[in-house]
Length: 114
Image 1 (spheres, rainbow, N blue to C red):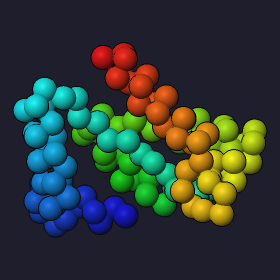
Image 2: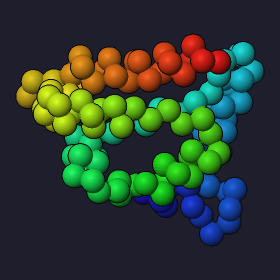
Image 3: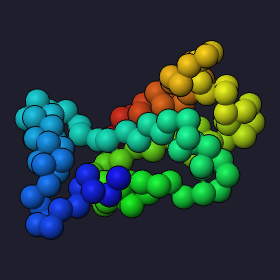
Image 4: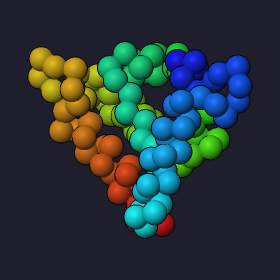
């Protein structure tokens, strides 16, 4: 996924332009801009197995330039305790109540610490 932010001409990536446009708009409205990493089932499985994410370099690029909130460590902890399927809605690849609560807590903690 690195290709999303890396182009032959640094700073010319359309993805960076889109992210920067969102950031400007949010700042103009007086808001706080941050990016939330929401890993899906297979990235969570990779992390549970101790593997690095296939898009880890993309996350690091985003983290270096933006406020990146990452609930993945807590999601992985929950998956180790309750099983990966506990983070997914029954018969779906969408997050369960538990996973949504972890993401919400991550965002709430970041907002309250500002």
